[in-house]
Image (cartoon, rainbow, N blue to C red; front, side, top):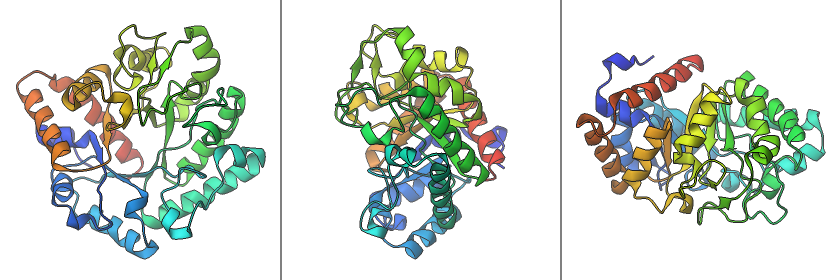
Length: 333
């Protein structure tokens, strides 16, 4: 277990990042390998990284061996449209959330168990699932069949099964996308959706699964969506103090809050540094960046400098690192 008191500022800031890499072989990416040695908190794997089962299993071992601290080894393995093992099977290997829910609770549990066995085989320890969005907009371009249902109680029922099954298999589940992506008309990968919905409606439908399942969730992902009920300023939930404070205080969530991928269109109106600074001040504990390129590593160095000169309080970094290290200790990563 890493002790936060022994960590340098650099190592603490690196702990707050989950980075991906472009290649199949991470050793070909000098920046990524440098980040691992600097104390990187987590790695995210995409389809481009997983071309062969045994090679990928060996890759995970290489990453662990070259990491200063044990990282979260994460993936988006939902089933259906969002699977990162497409190259292994020539397409989707699992049913989407909507399709699996139609088969009932036993099948949801069984498919989740299959996913867990696969992730355990590879040596991974975190999955960005379940999707807890409520599919209320039939024209939603990004959620649709990724959601279990258009009924929040159904989402809660199936979400709980998935969360419990992941935890039983020592995989860290990450509920997403808080406070709910189900009503949007815009894909947050491309631009920032704006939701003009009353707090009452948000709480009765979209927030409800997160509120009900927060006590059993070790981590939640925040969405790059502007919710007018929380903010007049055009700012995504992922870096909104009002949204993240609500998650901590009104809902009582005490786990890790992770941003959605920070290169998505939903957060592009801010510079990378401003977005991360706002996120840290708002309460984000970890940021996802899909590429450990020089631009991303320079950003991390900028944040380290801002902590050292007092622009970003050291206390905010320490809060996040304590949560991160406690969760790693709990799951023995």
